[in-house]
Image (cartoon, rainbow, N blue to C red; front, top):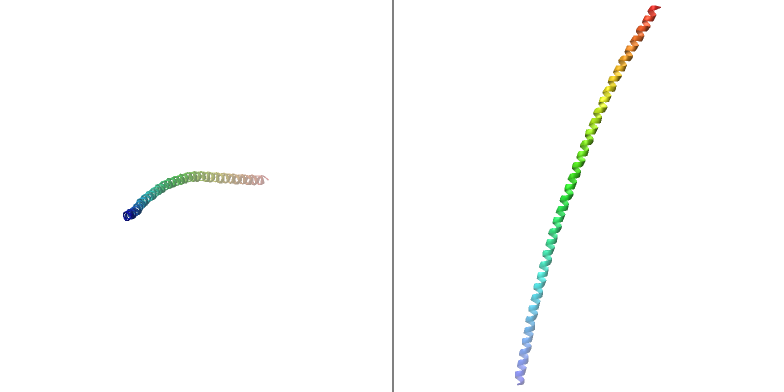
Amino acid sequence: MTSTLLVVAVVSILAGIAGGYLLRQIIARQKRDSIELDVKQILLDAKTEARQTLDEAKKKAESVTESAKRDERERESQIRKLEERIIQKEELVEKRRLDVDKERESLQAKANKIKQIEKELGDLEESKR
């Protein structure tokens, strides 16, 4: 009976060791599968976050670009208006200059006429003496 008991004990120990090994393998496989799922989920979350960040960056870039274009159009409009004002002022200054030149020529002609009349008067006075 002791040898049977010994055989049963050895078989039980071997069965326990084999069962423990199998149980450990099952638990390790479940942990590995669980870790793999966690890693896959982390990667999926990272890809999703990266995609969202990229989309946000694209939207921000489009917004900044549009704002810059709008500012550029406004500046160009202001520059055109200023150029038009400068051209108008230059035209006005040129017109005034021409008016002043005409007035100066008119005054010069009148001064020459006055000198001529004074000379004629002087000649008349001398001829009367």
